[in-house]
Image (cartoon, rainbow, N blue to C red; front, side, top):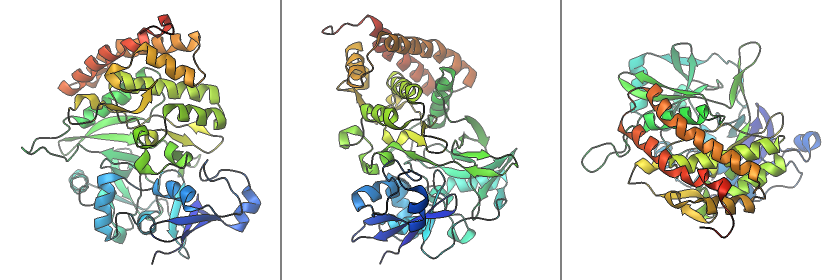
Length: 429
């Protein structure tokens, strides 16, 4: 039988999760949290603090959103000897280090805290071995060694601590500072990489987005035992004045809108781009700035051929006011023929990224109540900037290969819909 769980923020218990039959659960804030934080949203915009418990339809999207998804979740379930749908069991096993500042432990166990210097520093060969083991040891999980980490996402990744040139695995309560993303381990029937140069692809897209003015997670490519690995600095971690690593709370848009992770794509009933805009307009402490940033991020996804810019790849920072978090997981999926061409979020009713026109953008902006000439011109200027920067950033990446060249060509083709936007008039195709 599933056990009750304690949910904490920054190590301070806020709520209790209680099994509600099957694989579902309710979430109830503790009386002291209600007294101190009534009406506030410390955990999630979908779960304001109140005395009444939240039923599974509101609680489960937040809880499930703390865990890995798809193949990583399946492998993790097998490793933990749990059913794939056992969200509570998985959180009890690996919920001590989640995205943001949340930790989840079985009720009665102490919340993470204490020694921030507990790191297992690795040699380059040891690190390469841990990366190779990710398909059978998702997230580098090793409860016996005190490594219990839960991160959402469907791609193999290894949370680590980086201090100068040293890289290690966090133990116990130690927060990770970076995420390592190795090349995809998936192979075709002939043994070739299913998604070649995925590391270089993502590194390039992140670099291009930064150059074009989008706030992104800091990243770079690092060779580890002869293999290129993407190193991404966690935006939900920072160092305080003493140099200690501090967690910063965040949630993704699926959690904020109480949508289960398996509904992260709009076609599956998940959030649309207009929902992201509405959410930011209602809750962001800098709504005008964040709304435009979200629209530009959608434009970047369309222009670069990223059909995977779903609601779990948009996140919110929830400390010091609600803000749109930096962009992450930016990849051109259009260069891989095996992947769907449908956008994760439609633009003006159009899901096919290579078929989006100025008419679709105008319809989208109108649906968001944003169709002004000033914003049209800004989006056209943004697209022009991306086109101009694309070959330059590719050259700066150095030896990025054919995949990046394909992304550059995709940008040149797909920017036309935004470049034509200022001149578009309603009723024109």
